[in-house]
Image (cartoon, rainbow, N blue to C red):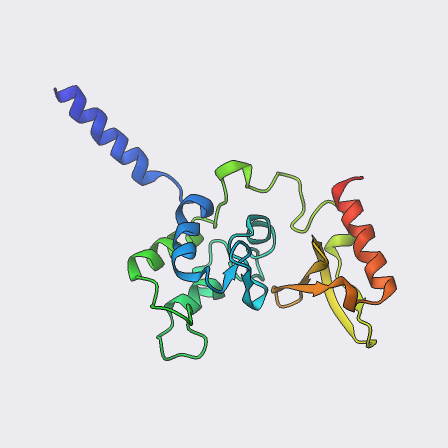
Amino acid sequence: MNGTIVMVILAVTVLSARALDYESDILPIMKEHCFQCHSEKENKVKGNLALDDLEDMRDYQRAKFSLIRPGNPKESHFLGVLKMGEGDDDFMPRKGVAVPSKEIALIEKWIVEGAPFKKSGAEKKEGKGELGKTAMSQQTLDWKNLEGKIIKARFVRLAGDSVMLLLANGKSYRYPLAKLSEESRAQAKKLAVDKAGI
């Protein structure tokens, strides 16, 4: 009998010491409170933020100058907007009730732990740069639209008929390929091929 109690205590200790992970611990909170505005599956992607786009969240929304700053909850805008008062202009979720403080504490703990993505092999592969395989995709490049305006951003990936760009402020942005100049569309396609290693 005493052996069973020890085993139960050990199992509870191991489970409570387990590192948090986005897909199994944070994503369910996001689904409940944020998917009506930030979900590819729900076809609602406001602010160019799809919380269920695991690749985007893992590779581009968490970095030193991104929405989620691993190990630094105070500088993580992702957490900051959830902690704001409901009367604040930037409070999230805008269309709903505040995320319960217990869940916010879990998100904060996840960020403190480094904002890991572990389930389903979603963690970044070692040796892969923050923005992919090619040095060019890690550089800030000029992207010209059809009106001749220049956007300075890093290439992230092609997403259907759009290109995902990472702006200097750390925000990712989906820009329709059809609105880019021919030269910028060719640049996006070349970078996508290079990144895929084809």
